[in-house]
Length: 247
Image (cartoon, rainbow, N blue to C red; front, side):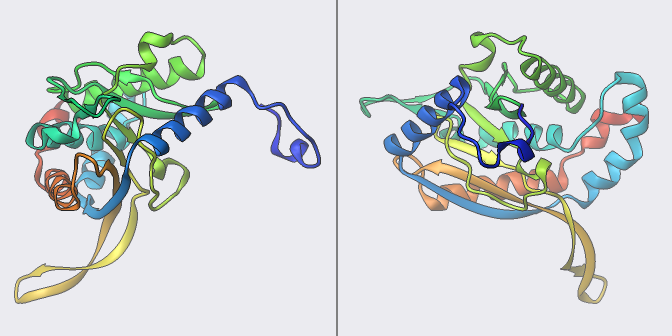
């Protein structure tokens, strides 16, 4: 990719990949009614667990354990409770398809632009399985090894907007999907939490979770319920059992 410093004062031909991305993003905005809802998730326990296992995980797996597999796991499980988020609307707007499996698109930043490889049949996968799949797909798409079959057919998408430091965003739907989740940067914040004698202030690790949804199918209340399920899953899920082999 041309260095940013070298672009100033030049005129470049729009790359083919950027043309495809531009067409798809415009199509998505033109054919859907997009809104974004945001909730904040307390991921303090996940941060502590990852800190305990990340070194041994890298030793055994040869890859880093990021936070994204935790979000993917919770997202897939939330789709089981709220199937309207793992759906699509046909172009003629006469049929809604509620997909029987979660084909999870994972937005990956590449030198050519944003690409979305797919984790097939993501339901039931463990945290280590998500971590391996994400690593393999990201490496493959950045190296140009993945074909069209690996980059199509997703039913819901997750975009790690926090990877570049963003706290929140308004992701654009990966049409014809009806929902896309963004995962914001995890930051330390003072929050009011339950205490022994009532409420107290504590320093917690939190992340914003924006979800863009197609208002033709999903209402704001449903988006709020979906995010609540996702947030609660991140707070109470026993991820430690899936990572016990790395403790």
